[in-house]
Every structure is written in C-alpha cells, then in structure tokens.
Amino acid sequence: MTTTARAAICHGSDRPFELTEVELDALRPDELRVRMVACGICHTDMAVRDAQLPMPLPAVLGHEGAGIVEEVGSEVTVAKAGDRVVMSFNSCGDCPSCAVDAPTYCYNFLPHNWSGTRADGDPTVFVGGKPMNANFFGQSSFATHAIAHQRNVVRVPDDAAGIPLERLAPIGCGLMTGAGAVLRSMEVRSGLPIAIFGAGTVGMAAIMAAKIAGADPIIAVDVNDERLALVRELGATHAFNGKEDAIGKIRELCPQGLGYAFDTTGINTIIQDAWGLLAPMGICGIVGASDPADMVSFNEAAFMGGGRRVMGILGGDSDVGSFLCELIGYHLEGRFPFDKMIGYFEFSEINEAIEASETGTVVKPVLRIGQE
Ligand SMILES: [Zn+2]
Ligand SMILES: [Zn+2]
Image (cartoon, rainbow, N blue to C red; front, side):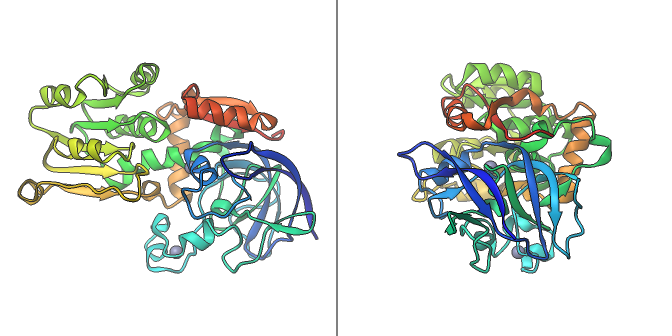
C-alpha cells in the first residue's frame, strides 16, 4: 500500500525547489513512516543541489526531520506509532565501524544515505508511478511524510515532552557534529584553551559544547560581526574577526598554545594557521567541507615533536541514539541553547529559507511542515 505525500523536489542549482505530489512505498520490516512536523535546512542540502555530492538528482532532500511516527515495520523496536521522533543519518549496522558504534564512518554510508534509493536499489518514493530519488540520509524529510529506518530514528525522551519538535528537528546533523566533535571526538578537557574557526551551526554547537566541557578560554573566529555577537551569548569568551589578524590575537591570548583548534571552514590555509597554534599534545579537528583538490601541509618536526594531532571528524563521532538524547538533556538544563540560532519558515517558503541560509541572515532555518 502506498501513502500520498507532498515533497519538495530539488532539480539542481538552476531551478527552485518545487512542491510536488509524491507516493511513498510500503514499509519494509525495519522501516518507519514518519509524518513530518519540521525539518532543518543544512549546507549539505545545498551541496547536493550544486552537484558537489554523489546524490543523484532530481531528488527529495532534507535530512534534519522531526515528526510523529505513523506506522512501523514488523521488526522495528526503536519507536512505535504515535511516538515523537527526530531523525539523523543512516548506517548499515554490520560493518567494522558500525560494530564499534561509530556509524558516522560506516563503510556502506553511501548506499544507505546518498544513492537515492534503499541500499538494495529499491526506491522509497515515486512521482506519478515513476521512481524519484529519495532516502536521502535515510529519510528525505523535505516532505509531509518520510520513510526512515530503525537505525536513524531516535524517540524523543519523555522528559523532553514540553520541547516542540520544530525546535528539535536540527539536532541530528550540524548540532550533533559540532557538539560531538568537542565532547566525543576530541574529548576536550576542562581548563584548556580552544579556538573554533567558523561560526555557523557546527561552530556554534562546538562553542556551546566547549562551555559544557569547561574549556577556557573559548575563542570564536568568523568574519560576520553579527555571528560574533551571538557566539558570546552561547559561551565564547573571546570573538575575533578573521579579517583582523585573529591568528596573532590568539597567539597573544594563549602564548603556550591551544589545546584544541577546531576548523569548520574547510579552507586549507585556515587549517594550517590553526594547526600552527597548537600546544604540545594539541589536537586540530577538521569537519569543514573543502575543495576535493585541496591539500594541507604541516611541519613534520613540529607535528611529531609535540605529539600534535590532526583529526578528521564526521558527524561528531555520534552513535546517534544515546548522544542525541544526551544533547536533548543539555538543552533541557539550559546548557545547549541552540534555539537562539533557529529561524522558522513555512514549508512553502523553502526557497526563501535556503536563501536566508546562504546570505547568512539565519544561522539555522527550520521548515514548519505539519502540526505536532
Ligand atoms: Zn546536515
Ligand atoms: Zn556500517
């Protein structure tokens, strides 16, 4: 049995997203159908639109969905019909990375998230009876309804019943990535200095997490003065404009060097400058999307001699379920106030929401898709 839904189809960079009637396939045993309440918009959606990622087009994108479960397959235990859920990326569950609860590095990430179909090649979404690329990050949540999977759905804990789903929607991507990089990947230690380069969603999440971890000082670098004002509210002790010798100012502030440098820009010259600020045993964490042709270079003697490390990080090393619940817990305690970054848009305003993200007027646009 198929379900009718309305989805925003992405055709590429030369056309706006178009709301279109679609049909969802019947559920497999490990799948859930979620009626969408809200979905965040992320730079990865735009990277796909601009053909920078292997996801085929046209497609239903959207990978920060939150909603209410309508129906579950026979093997699903993670949630039941009527549950409030948030969604994240999908993974295979039986590769060497999944075996150690590191699904962000799933060996089969591409077929489970970016192939446009289920991992076995079967479509989840149709338009007029013909297959449409979907199952983006195991969800495709720019739609009134989505098929998700046992491994990428998280039931919202009961103690968070008072938090609207439209606020929780973006927690499973950029927020998880920035906070996880600090708390899980780099395991930032209390009392050590950290500098965070780039104050978008990921950088701001890292700043909030650095405060949770007790890092000191917490230095934010960006070129947008409005964002530099916001990061102070989120926990940054210092905010430097990257156009005004931020590297020199950090060196002056932390003459012994940084315990942690965290790059969200993906710009190789910034990464090299950031790495050059590290104290002995310092870690330079890298999450930014860069040009595939770019290289970075470091001085070998300084790299080895100080026990310095460079760490590529995907998805903040999140294990999905328990880490998202941990972050929701910090939010309930007022220690992860990511709602300050959100701007809301109606589903029909998806193109305006994307523009707001690209011009930087809104840090994290969230689409209101349905009633909670
Ligand atoms: Zn994302
Ligand atoms: Zn896997």
